[in-house]
Image (cartoon, rainbow over all chains, first blue to last red; front, top):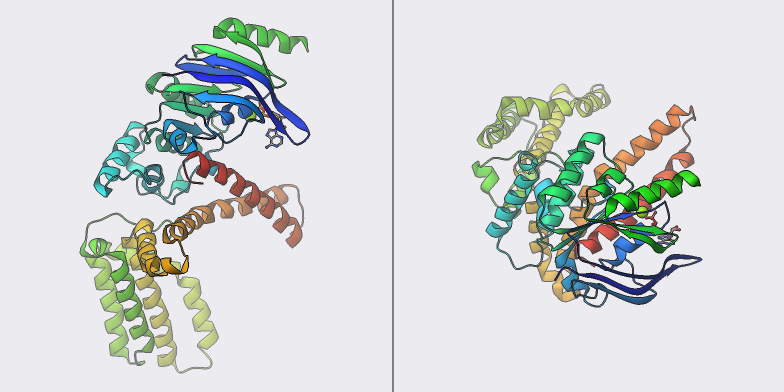
Length: 229
Length: 198
Ligand SMILES: Nc1ncnc2c1ncn2[C@@H]1O[C@H](COP(=O)(O)OP(=O)(O)O)[C@@H](O)[C@H]1O
Ligand SMILES: [Mg+2]
């Protein structure tokens, strides 16, 4: 079951409607979310893990209601934010990765093993005992990704995960998200080259889905509209 | 505490954090109360040095830690040199340096995680009074994580102000710092929620 389903979802903030009657059904492995600033990309991403509660409408992520079944959902959905600095909870790299496994009833040895494996996967093994804040921006984002993947989610939602990174680190994160990890991915991004590498692109404008389908034509129409205005 | 831990598997590394803290506190108390006698204090200094070697840290690390205390030592010497006999002054300096080196030895050989766990265990009896030890431990860990972040904000603000040639004004420093700290804690709350802690 890999279906993401929104039925007539509206999200209202004081004085502003961020999503307007959005109905979507997505099952692709890599889903790009594009659109101008303030179009509702982040709000859409956040409804998928219950950080935002719809004012009206229903959300189902792999059959789970993100708001009412939030405990179950958090184990299935990992979220990567833009800012590498605000995702680190624990003082050292290994402790931060281990934090995602709290409350799962794993022994210390199991936790240590899974942390070591997960850090190895993102190439941060040698920093295990370093203070997390001594890492570079790109490394912090890799740590955030590691902290998400260690929980073995079935969906990873990433909201502009490369926005704070330089070109080399962006490529590294993108390669990981798009090519290396097996999980389903929802990628909200301004980087249209990344969107082009997804299996489907969904375009938001003014809180509504205005276009969706094969990334290349969706992106072309988006660029065309932007040139017009 | 934040960036000191040096991985290793010496006896000192393997000693549980709780007992280690207690032993070090007792030793520090002993050194503070020890008579200002050259032999006792030399002995104490040598004993601390021996502990560093036992922890596999080597003379270089001792020198590094001691070097970090140079300004403190200078201040102590300057403030005492005219008022106290040389031996008393030297004794005071040695006491302070030894106690700080002892404290650093704990942080050098103990993961923050272990210290936090030890505190969590020590708080367990307070559960009946409504204290949630794991919450306290989490807050403590997050505070330790956040200190370098806030320090980074402070540097950013100072640099931004210097770049614009703004003279140092306390309010112009504190207000943006507060705003950045609040924004940070907002974002951190989202990250906590996303990672399954409400
Ligand atoms: N927490 C919030 N409170 C008030 N308004 C918000 C909040 N989050 C988003 N908005 C508003 O909702 C609209 C959509 O925002 P967002 O989903 O962040 O867009 P995007 O990520 O595409 O830039 C914007 O106008 C934004 O100002
Ligand atoms: Mg956004």
